[in-house]
Length: 329
Image (tube, rainbow, N blue to C red; front, side):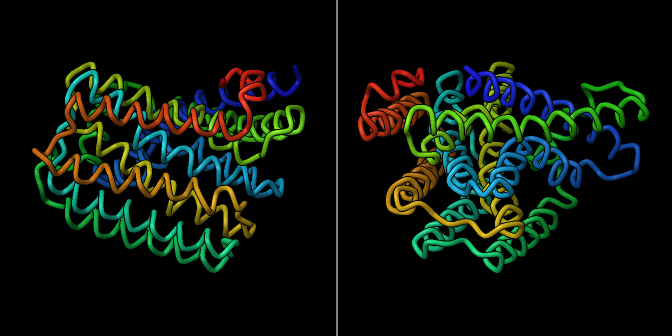
């Protein structure tokens, strides 16, 4: 019961912290005079990916690399298959050529880089620094390709303007909200990792499995909420760009910071299977988006089925009874 309590409380705090940090930091950044484009590229994207970031950092500091990597890899699989699939089932998701070629190809190249790193058996600090440098290059390219364009042509700027329009908070309260969110994220990351470690120990399953499934799905809940709300309101133009941007942040910023703090050893199961599932999901998404410049409902159904099949394979691989006890079978 302690494992479930720690994990449950941790995931709730991560979701709450992500939402409050995001809302507070967006308003504080606007008060400091940052442009909507910068807010969208850095603040909104980082805030949405903050659960994956704090889990990865906490797991790396707890010397639990399987949970850190499983969380990143699993979150990207969730985003590319389940989140895009569910969003497309609600409403077909348009994908502009810029999202496909700039962001989609960046996600694909970053996924290939993680596969290469994982096959070496260790993601070193130097690799982490390279990922952070690549993230900086991506942000600069995104800024200059979106700069001086109409706001509706930039996913990042559209998201920032949308959030600023929804909020009417005083800067002082926004700052308090941001601090409260950081506290929630800190304890949420610790509790989620501790609960995941206990759960793996109690049910004799690999730590990587907990990171790939329970923690990855819980950390991706902010993306799920954003996607479903956006598609439900007909704001489909930002949904798929938001999810791809989140995957890029996970691969370059989150993994880069975690590896820079502590080198991450890669479990054979992650290196020989799960990273290839992540790569395949990224590779599959690009032609889907480029075909007609949208992901249709039928394609969304295929993506959801693929995610269900992936989870089913993990369940079969570990033994149904183990996962049934975890509530995943």
